[in-house]
Image (cartoon, rainbow over all chains, first blue to last red; front, side):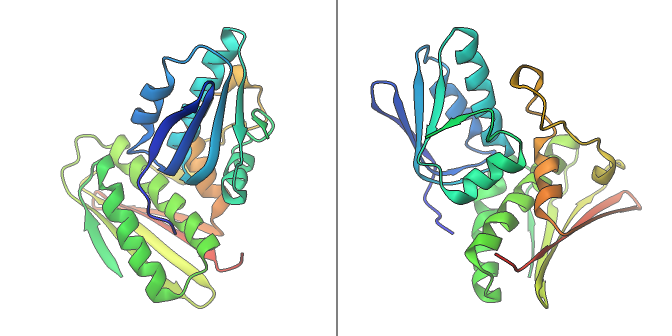
Amino acid sequence: MNKDPFAIRLESKGVVRLSGRLDASQADMAKAFLEPFSEPLVLDFTDLDYISSAGLSVLMITLKRLESSGHTLRLRNVRDRIQNVLRYAGLDAVFTIE
Amino acid sequence: MEHSFARRIDSLDDIFEFLTRAGDSMGVPTAVWFSVNLVVEELFTNMVRHDREGSQDISLRINREGDCVKLSLTDFDVDDFDITRVPEVNTAAPLEERRPGGLGLHLVRRMTDDLSYHYENRKRTVTASLKLHE
């Protein structure tokens, strides 16, 4: 498995790119990064190798917060294994996946 | 292979490194190893968070048995908490009713072919098996 460290950055307006492993030790950092956004948001998962329930929680919290203020959260370029995790968690139908 | 890890969340980097070495030596397909990583993370973080007063390291043992990967995590000097009896989360509920908690153990159940729990002398052991199919 890829062992790249987790990173999250603003790629362009409204597009945030995540890479590496979003595990329980990185979830707080991801949550803190996403908290200031109050606009429609796309999370680009092109380089995201791994996600656990801690990462899913960050996604759910962010989605609820944005939807409550009338905005959308979409996931882009989700790899099959991560899509499986979303499906197992029953979140594949909750998120808009491009 | 067996190793002990400090009971804190930032031990995960060391755990993943250990699992990578174990996976290479056992010749386990990457897709299965993704699931092994996730199951170990969820079980480990559950132990860390459930017994915050615990002071001893958590032991992780992993080996290949035929067409299965078998792993066990042991937490020492802790209270009884049978994860196999934790109620299922309703993954079909609408977003507004969903709570983040409980998803980890739900994923463990979905990704393992066998999951068991043993508690004796204040020692808690969770054992899981994953088949080596893609």
